[in-house]
Length: 268
Image 1 (cartoon, rainbow, N blue to C red):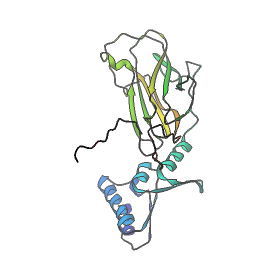
Image 2 (image 1 turned 90 degrees about the vertical axis):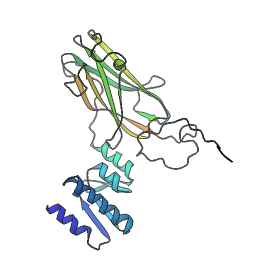
Image 3 (image 1 turned 180 degrees about the horizontal axis):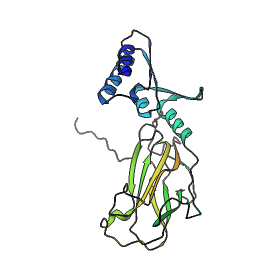
Image 4 (image 1 turned 60 degrees about the vertical axis):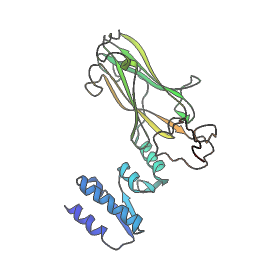
């Protein structure tokens, strides 16, 4: 109630700058919707400045054109919202482990244990940085310790934590929950991602390995969040999807796919 009252008073004051500190973190949907509307009116219709202080990246993306990242009181980054938000996400990520030599401490359970994650370039070498034009393969190696059915799900998130893609391994090509068990041994599941498909930025893989007929979120053998991060860079190659377009594409779009287009005259 105090937050609602405070925002209502501040929003109707005749000030050149409106400072909003985490006000959208509280209240119900209707209250947040009214806040969004009022702040957009103040900035676009009244021509005033709205300074939003928040850890909610989706709020920042919705409301702001420019973004400042502060770290311990010092300026860390400033500029376009998507790039600054991606810098913040990377600063919060811990060093990722992508190989496990000791099965007893590897992610998993008595049926399946993870061995390694890696991204492989077209030439076969392991990489963590790719051009937007480069295809690459995401590889998952794991051990099956006891006979069980195995399905693999992967979700891809962009630099601001938004889900942009989900995919499953070839288990889905057969009958769900009615396939032969994997016999104990080491396995590799791989997913090929084409070039001229993903937009630039930092991308993070989430991973689940589980046994159908259960769903991925029902007692999975492995549920790895932020399992691996790769960097996609725009090399401005005119032979790619960019073509002759000379301007910054921005990193907000999740994908930048090369689709088949045709433009033709249909009348004089």
